[in-house]
Length: 198
Image (tube, rainbow, N blue to C red):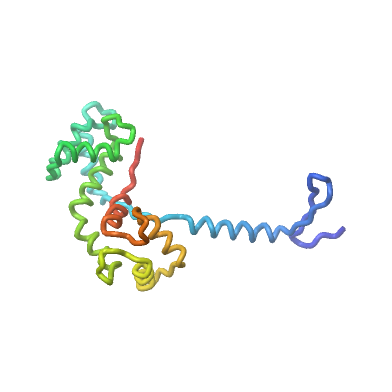
């Protein structure tokens, strides 16, 4: 039997010939690849400048008395105060617990950097986050709706399907009312800082 280009004959479990076209397989793989691409979430991440990261590392190394690459939670308080923050004991413990997922009482440089980034973001960016929120909430009701998000994506030239917009709202909408509140928006932005747990 003569086979066409791209076609192959294989036998099934029963020994009977099974005809299929390799081009069909390629198409299926391309479709699966497109589906996988749609599932990738893009999350903004707080980035230090090279100089800021060097300064953080110097501060961290000064507090790393044992040279093990970790600092005690108590020493973290010194670093936070040196940056001009005056957290209460409870706030400090909460900051440490947010990044010390192993509850070791010690922070790696990545955890230290993440905790400080979160503190910087919470103090310095609330005004900027609110400005961003207001860009979405153009009807000024304190909520971002499907229509608000769709309008913004069109204005910036990022055309998303209705399903993609719904998914974005669903990801941020923690009270399941179909809208993104100021609180949910701020939580989403703050949680965008990646936590690295050694």
